[in-house]
Amino acid sequence: MGLFSKIKSVLSKTRNGIAKKLTELFAKNKLGEEFYEELEDILISADVSVKTTMEIVDEIRETAIKEKCKDKEYVINLLKTELFETLDYAEKLEIKKPAVIMVIGVNGVGKTTSIGKLAYKLSKEKKSVTIAAADTFRAAAADQLAVWADRAKVRIIKSDEGSDSSAVVFDAISSVKAKKTDVLIIDTAGRLHVKANLMEELKKMDRVVKREFPEANFYKLIVLDASTGQNAYNQVEVFKDAVGIDGIILTKLDGTAKGGFIVSLSYELEVPVVYVGTGEGIDDIEDFNAKEFVEGLF
Image (cartoon, rainbow, N blue to C red; front, side, top):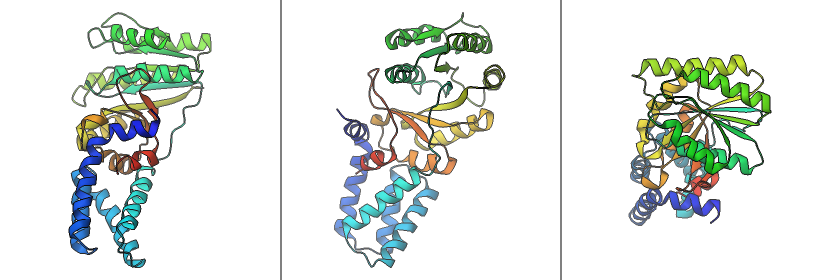
């Protein structure tokens, strides 16, 4: 199955909601204020934010009026173009070696599985990879990550539960520098903004990487569960304020009809989607492509 068909498949619930409503809209409405108001409602129902929705629809209305357009396909193409440009607004991220990728996010979003899939993907791209099991807070977190490391056939650096996470990061950096490893992926404890001690620990790990491995390209990727929709805004903003966020790994798109939230989140917070999970298998992670994502919505 190609990437486009995978994206189309995981977006099926969101696409079905949008497509059905658009068909009904074109069947009953000519272009006019009522049409554009309903178009706004359709995008908002797919969890695109009100602010971004209004900007998109304003652009479509302005272009359609200027071009004296009344054709359904033309309007849909305008909508696709606006969605693509909005989703493509944030600066793209390219992982360059030597790389340190710190993976962060709250519990339950699919962080461990995303790290395993990413390690496998990067190794298939002929990059040497080591995983640092720096989530020493959650019981058996390192053991679960070790299973994924074994499946991906990559090295893992871990310590006992309750150990100092920053010490694990320090040891992992020493190891990858000695072995000239291309990519170090750091797992971190799932944390919320109310867990002040865990956020401070995250900041400490951030400082350790910058101090001990300044020559590395350092990326912080947040894993987001697509089914959380607009609630993901708070997660991104909190982590962005704490240590900065360079990109998003998107999971569980297949379980929601509100996949549109990523359009406005990426645009408004200026954080690009870098990878998207497309299934349960170890190879079910892909580089994010805005054009294919938008096509998958229709």
